[in-house]
Length: 122
Image (cartoon, rainbow, N blue to C red; front, side, top):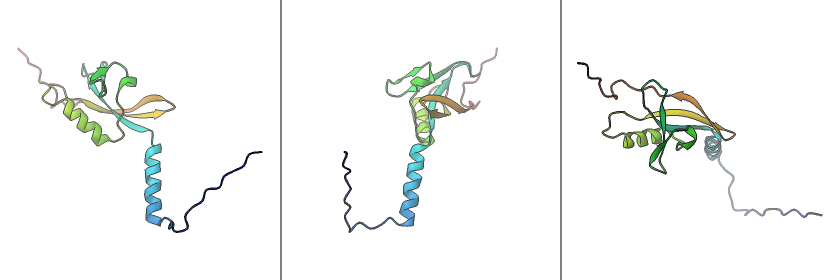
């Protein structure tokens, strides 16, 4: 027969206020949110060739499974800006979801024509 242990709580611990309960719920919901952000480079400009940024190896991968996941969009944008500093093509952000271990893209960011190098016509 199993015996169950009961946790002993100190009696001097005050119950959580309504504001503290809301903040705790918000943080738990934030952890459970499957939305993440990844940084990618659109090679051809038409979405056919994408390279996904892998920060840990300081390189790019051909598959989204190799990409570094970012919880916050502003962090992903900062990393993209740092990696594309003084380069022709700016890096872009994709919003993805991670459910049951699979990564699925929800939305690709479209390239801004101002960030790509102008084409030279002769």
